[in-house]
Length: 447
Image (tube, rainbow, N blue to C red; front, side, top):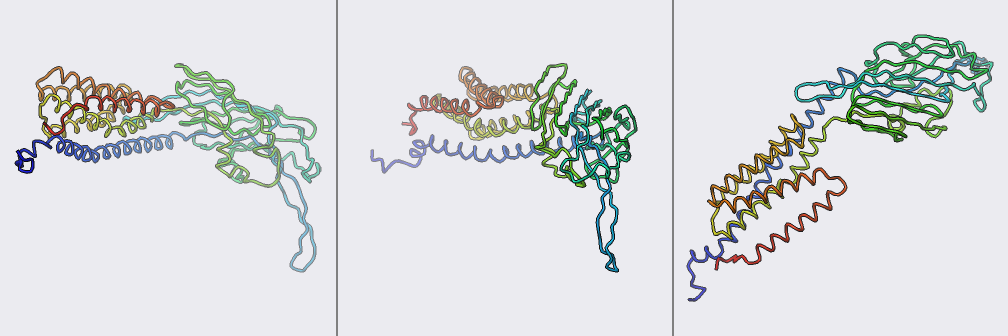
């Protein structure tokens, strides 16, 4: 028979496998649309979570950054000026000498808990922060100020707290045994929110002076310190079991277990970050980036990474659909049991819904358990559907195993960090090799 005289029906039968493969490829592209919509849904839920966290934090108290203390000593200076009658006169001005501590010690004990709003929550804490240290004997070398210009009886200690709404009580400040109560400082702009306590610094002209006070505060998400001493030490203890230690220095010691954490820092400033003393400049800490780079402390992590893991999982959606469709198509060819295109579409829809199930359960019980629930439900549904279509339990069981391996593969990739790319690329290479092996003897022309 002359091939040129083959009927249209014969030609359709010859190339039906190729045409079916093209149709399946088009279906995969169509399923890109709901997959992208699922990713938009995940982003929307994550943004909503972040909004609720910000609302809770603003009502309770935000992240706390503790600054200071800084010793401020007013001093007299004189300057000449020409008045309106062109006479040269001298007038007195008051400047400010700022001095940082020689040694600065922070010791914080935090009690943390979850503050819920619906299914979302923020990590909030109450903390007692004991601040102590000492100022060295006042040294005016290189400052172009004489000791007779100083007004030590009008000195005061200045310190800052990033969110004063979280201050439970005004602290008692002690310097060389003399105690005074701190109050808000509205005329100083050294820190974002200033507190000051008037003290008499006359003794510091002769010898060093020790200070101490306790801050009773509340905050959320993060507690940090600014290392303003030549030598700064900090210790934070708490009952939160998933802390993250942030800042330009890592803790010298740390211990984390189910009951909480303990961390200790020690750092030397030596004037590298901030000068030890200066005059009249009241915006030294106005550079927020510089302050944040210098600060260190602890962050109370909450499982927002569940959204990140769900998003990473959803990015494998098309790959899983592709591999599943290829496995179904090869099964269809090998067993010579046709599967309608609409059934492919239903299987793809079930695999897209998997990610919606994963997201909704993850907000309630966490990612790992949710992944197991969503994967078991999806694999079970698809397996039952394929078994009813093929009327072959062995083949349906094999497809169930293959689909389970695919979802397990994605779960392992999500859990890995540094090895994710290596494991993923090697596994995909093996999968392609297996598909090549099983497809090499398929008669694509149905002959």
